Length: 213
Length: 260
Image (cartoon, rainbow over all chains, first blue to last red):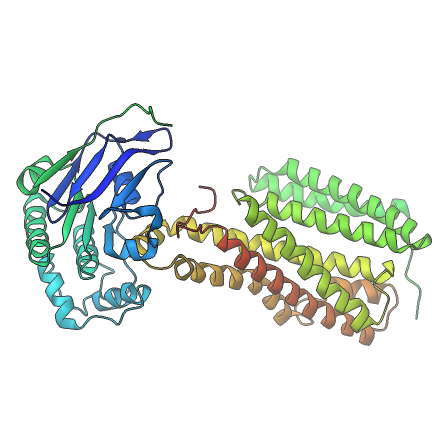
């Protein structure tokens, strides 16, 4: 029997967003699809505990999210949000600043280079981020988050600023890396071609009438 | 010392003529705030006339209760105004702001009146005007601090969300904004101190000199009040921000930004 990583029953976030029962398998790449307003991004934020459901419960590895330490959960279940944020300065400065917020020592240039390669960003660690294009910033943002090697990597529109070819290469590399490191991936994407190519499991959200609250 | 010249009512009324200059400039520069200028001038006049009458009554009928009532009204008004200018705060944040303004203002005031001037705190002649300056500046400082804090949170949403998703502690995420807002609140007071005596002769000192006090005494009061104001602004803004920002974080380490 397949190992279920996330399970949620009768889940609602206020009255506007409700979900049918949800199960996300461990160790596979799940794409969350559905029309706008069905709560795709909200679901990811409920999974990492940045939001709490107004109704229903979520279980991670069989444990109720309510009983888990939220900071620890977010570090294990890492969400790369749609809105990219980078600090001023170089690529190295950015890795350092994000690692400082996790109270971890900055990674070496070799480690930085490794993750830049995974995310198809051919820059040196001392390259400045200030003049990067939107797509380059998005790849750097992905590289930084991936370098924390979480248990679960949640990607919210990870390739929205990338052209089709780059999007496929980056996604392919990230998923290869995650498969190798046994990281479960949950991705939200509007890109149908990307979903068809990479999804091992699809969670199709639809508007659910709120009958729970 | 010479007595202060008493202003006659007609003589005094002539000062309103100066507002015509402001109105003319505003009209020429297409600043559509004529109504505000008139309302502001009118309100100021009415409020100060009332304050003058009330203070005259209190000075003539000295009673600690009157001083206490006046102080309470002053603090309540400054809290109301600060909260009115800082929309979107949650209830606990509002409470933190109110307590910070009241307690910082009162503690510095008590120290000033009893410790520096050596008067009874119930003496309205010292307590009321000094409270006005101290609490008034606390109000401006805290308003500035809250605006800076709220604006920076709004403009840095992507950063806050990113760091929260990363698993950083909410305190660590929000504290830099708290510190920046405190700096913003303190700068005008400190800049004012830098220029004082050269660029400007401050209000309290001018008032005392006009009413016949020796300039050497007036400067001591001015120096003392400036330090008291700086301390109150710092304390009130620090406490408002420090107790306030914690109300944005819940037990689940979630952050609810101001106005959300």
